[in-house]
Amino acid sequence: MGTQRLRRRLVKHLVEQDVLHDAHWVEAFRSVPRHVFLPRFFLPSDRGWTAMDAGDPGWLEQVYSPEVLVTQLDDDPSLWDEARRGPVPGIPSSSSSMPAIMAIMLEELRVGDGQRVLEIGTGTGYNAGLLSHRCGSGQVSTVDIDAELVTAAREHLQACGYAPSCAVGDGALGFPAGVLFDRVLCTASVSAIPPAWLEQTVPGGLVVTTLNRPLGAGLVRLVAGEGAKGTGRVLARDGRFMPLRAHRRAEPAALPAPDDADWRPTRLPMSRLVKPERKFEFFASLELPDVHPVREKPSSGTSVVLTRADPGPIALTHPDGSWVRCRKAGETFEVAQGGPRALWDLAERAYVLWKSLGKPERDRFGLTVDGSHQEFWLDEPDGLRWPLVA
Image (cartoon, rainbow, N blue to C red; front, side, top):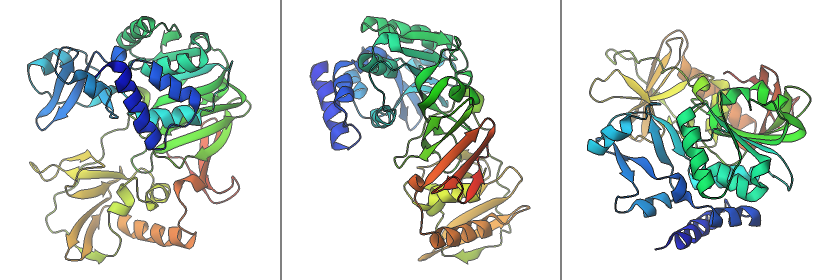
């Protein structure tokens, strides 16, 4: 199948998924060749990450699949050569995002003709290519902290006939030239909104990004005010990205050994707190800031790693040493908890409060930013409020 047919197939999928509507972006996804930006990438396997490049069977089909494709592990380019010899362990540090999430964010940007756009997180350059096709290269700037990624992205863009302004720098500080933009789009996640983004956005301009939170991550769109001020909404559509390097979180606290745990029944399943598709998850994150969902590694029983999709034993930890374990008990559930705070008691109280408020979903919440002072609110800025814990 030729690449044009593959691009059309991808667009058809995005339209059917109800994430792509605007004719400008439909044309961009049909026109910009994703394969130019993804000459090689990593694929997950049971034994680690394997490497795939343009010489491998199935490469084009994989490129035009609707999936995220990891392009770097552990900030280490040398792992590519190792992965060609066999599976390697590693944590993704750069990728080409899932096309559906890209489409959602690009449409939420509401970009108009003649507007200047800043992209934070150049990565492969594919998103900058989509922006350049829609807005014109002269209107697009993109920045990434990894010089090798920027060099490769610039080459990919030039091969497609695009020439946006590409810079190396810490995306949390905005664009090095200090230009004002009408739109700012970050395709990595942040633990809080960097003030520089609002300072580099014209008043009334839009900032679209995703928040890096152990619970309740997701997309937000802010309207810039004067200086480092802005206000906006949490978006109904969920989207999650690997964080900017400066916004990576520390590993969650380890669980204590399960010996002598004191179990009690609960009617609240852990899945309601940790599954993004569950309506309670975002509210739970406000009431339980900095609580991490984890799973125990079967090999040790005590080490933990972040998870959202793993079906294994799920637990919660907090940096202060508080923890919760949950297990199935027939048709119900049991929990054990410890540490300075009874986290599950707090979770159950949060669930009762959420129901009393009408079970608000994520798009009923907003975010106000005034420099480093940032807080969520329910329905209106003067409603119930919670600090954004970075």
